[in-house]
Length: 319
Image (cartoon, rainbow, N blue to C red; front, side, top):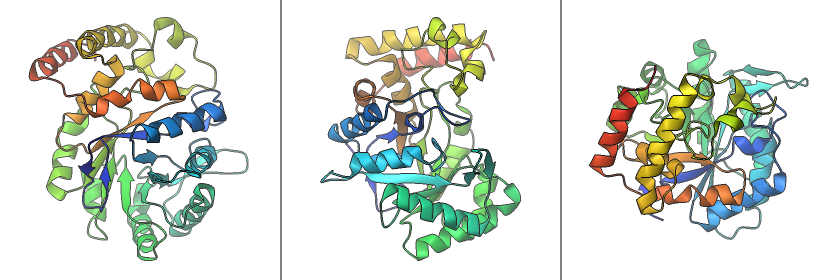
């Protein structure tokens, strides 16, 4: 699998990375429902076997459980993938979540992630959300200290705006940004992606299939029967009138991908990778079969005609 230079880091990463949000399980506020740990580990193993060389996780996914599963999956690997994780979303003994960018909190989170991941240093440590915004500078200063001390190798952010990036860059360079991006969420094309290109900030986008909506496996019945612990049941993209329009978009993506042997999901991922500012796309898999169904996006290139057809369809969708 080809690799791309990841911003100003020393890493060359594959265009697709394994995202481990969903494998955290359903026992937390943003869970995706019940998850079999064996399937999760098999999914990670399959991703690495197919050439994917980075895994993105976060302390908060499953409230620590996702990081633990990542550690188990890579423990016996000869050529281990890079591991990226995140801080700033914290939880208490009652599993209630909150935000913190205080220096001591970030340090505690880092130490806990190192233990769960069973590593001496985290390859990429990211601020998950820029909240509370008043503490951005304090949080970023601590991230820079963690890097100086060798506890993390590179530091980046997730869900930041251009203005928020401008605030912290004078403290320490931002190596990477992780924003949401899909054909249903293209807003970052306006200012954020051009800014990252200008600043040589590596970009790994999340939810390129919009949490499974564009995977090709979503149906009206499945959306109507999400389990109570699946956060998507309250997301407007899985409700009318967006649901019907999104399912029609998926049929279009299937027609585009089919002659090339690619799924709707692979077309959706390839659409995000077409942008020159995007280094890679984070793609989740809850079992090995799901990984097999998306890995082809790493090498697939949409034609200008395909992109035009998609853009015209998107222009007519309900807002």
